[in-house]
Length: 369
Ligand code: GLY
Image (cartoon, rainbow, N blue to C red; front, side, top):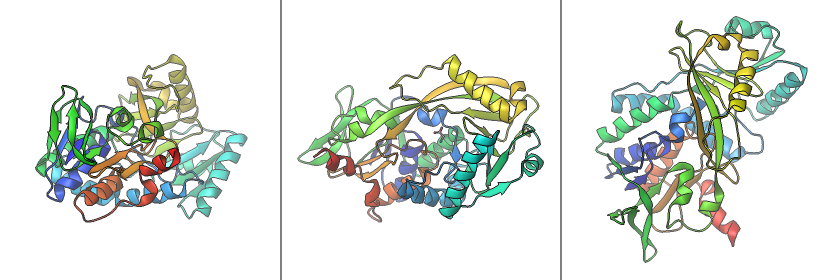
């Protein structure tokens, strides 16, 4: 099996396939985990990021979140290193009457969906998180929404793939080679063919640029820019222990004194510049929720490209050419959906499972006819 892309999704698929005893080669043109996974905030947030109209995606997200603790334990055992898993819960907060009305609507929607959310008095929220700004109007707790450090996670996944006999190679892939309706392997930019019985395209939004994909796939994918900051508290951890979400920003603790403050959602093509306006807005929003943010050291400013799709759901499973599978288009949920994506694709590759049709890449080919 050749997996194109050593991000959190490609590595999760590779690890599962390698655990089934398949021979796995992962190809990556840059650093492993150096693309969108490097920039991702790492929220495991099926409840706080739920969208009422996206029920199928919500079911997949909940299934993946349920797997997380066990998946992390197995991963740490295989890789022999930490993953930055932080089972910390999430607080959603509102600063004024308008935000409180909107947050209450969001809480009610989640309750109707059967999701675990609790309305908290602002005083109770400040007991839980004493650094929160005074004067917040409403807080809602999502106790099962957690966080992980995607950079540590990718390193662990890479270690686990190798521990199971998989291989990583630096290579720039031009596309998928197809012969007689079957996958023959992967064609590199230098013209070489690497033969494979199965290929998994897991290169995030860059999957769209690969040759040899069925029609519809490239058109279904688009980059959605997200800007964020990595901040550090010189005094160490403790300013915030849970993920904090406001209407216009989120703050994710790493548990070691670092905090990720994100994230803009911008339709700007493949632009990855960091802009003053975005940083200003994120910092202003975060300081309004958590005044101590203004004392933190700015360690990094970043922009990444989420692999957006037409319906916000990933492209998972067989792509209409024998032996070709897709695992891309995870939009805002790549880190959350890594365990279930790895399981579904890895099991399908080993012939012990099938990917549910709802996420088939072929849904967009049908739309094109
Ligand atoms: N899931 C966080 C983000 O996309 O910004």
